[in-house]
Length: 74
Image (tube, rainbow, N blue to C red; front, side, top):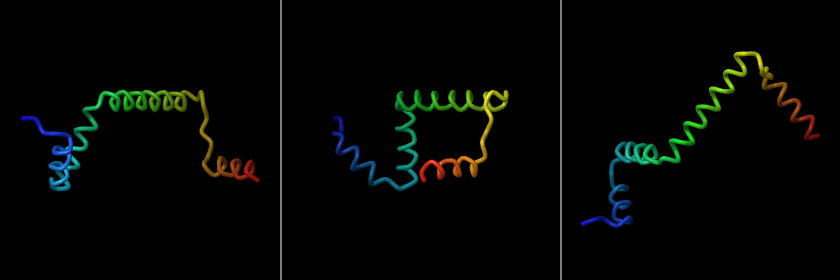
């Protein structure tokens, strides 16, 4: 006999914290969409690192960026 969604949720919330955390991680990892998003972010990170390493883009110090933002907001 299958449990209703509410019964599953209620049972899960009664589990110890560590077990709930592990269950939550497994449920999130099981979502295809999440895997696609994670893969897309990893590809974006790798692309940006390559651009910095190759010199195609140059990093700007954080203080300089913040100074520019503050100047624009004035």
